[in-house]
Length: 448
Ligand code: PHE
Image (tube, rainbow, N blue to C red; front, side, top):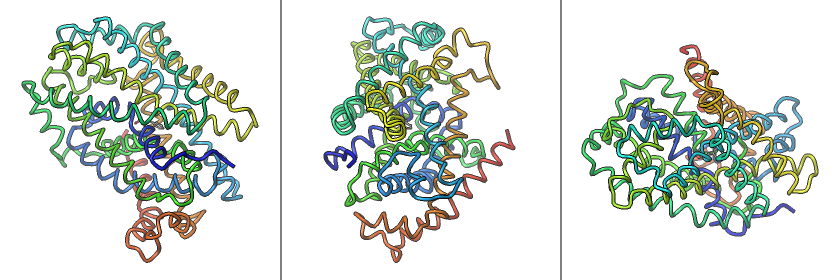
């Protein structure tokens, strides 16, 4: 029998822990700033509703039904030569995303130390930007951050699913949110920040383009941990009486709220400190210390913040590594310990070029993106939506909506074929989501 979650709340917290991470606090504000602020937020929310929540329900359901890892799930449910293999894309995506995710999380850990020793109490936002650029260009520092972060992830995953992950999530999540609320209160009283808040919240429909939509889809997949078989793997540890739709709603709403909170801090701060919208991956590494520096004991606050952010990133990276480990254990019949070490090592090797992207490898760019930006963009706008598309098509057309609804009904009796929401869900899964992803994919690419 597979390990199961110790408690309902343990599952919810671990899933929220997986969802909430650098995607909300680091990536969401950055992508929003680059994609027109409120225009992006508007599309993002629509994508959450019509793609994010339904796909989350699908992944949890597939996992609970098959009771196995992301690759075997499809093998168990069909014999078809193509469809039985689609789990591999999820597995590969998890590997690729974790490889650069761990690099950024490594910077977060380094920032904790730099803040602690007072190196971030620099006076202007510009000085902070220079500091950040210098740090990420340093080959040993970046690599060191990567190693520290992966080591922590490894240790947590090695202790097993329910013990390790549950214990961890209960403590780190609430603390991050409290600190974000304090930050918000401070930011919003800075001169010039209000204008930023308006820019962030007003849906200027005329600024919505296909590339904005593609980026919104990518961000939702990334932020909800979809398309990588993560929720699928978590679902495989679920009991049959769990209500999947309502749990999916809780996870999604929490994730969106944290992202919006982070955006409502970072974007107004961007305006208050006169930074450029295209500041890129350094955005939070500049704005957050800059805001804290306006408070007494700024460095101390900054270090606490980055420590908590590192925890939030850990609960996410733990979930990636869990997917890779679950696969290695089931497939190669390896003991859990060996499997975890093997998976971590592969991530490290793949992560190295990202760690060196702003330093020794900075000569390598494609369309102005260095290796790390490229891997980030490629995975969220190509790999994840593609994997999501296949999972949705599989559920709607191969495994079959009726079967899916039957499985969801266990634990959610109201989710039956006479129910409006279930019918709506069927239409979304069979037609609307695949068409939307395909359309935006194709036109987005043609438009370049
Ligand atoms: N959703 C996480 C975040 O927002 C990142 C993540 C993606 C975690 C995919 C697991 C799987 O940071």
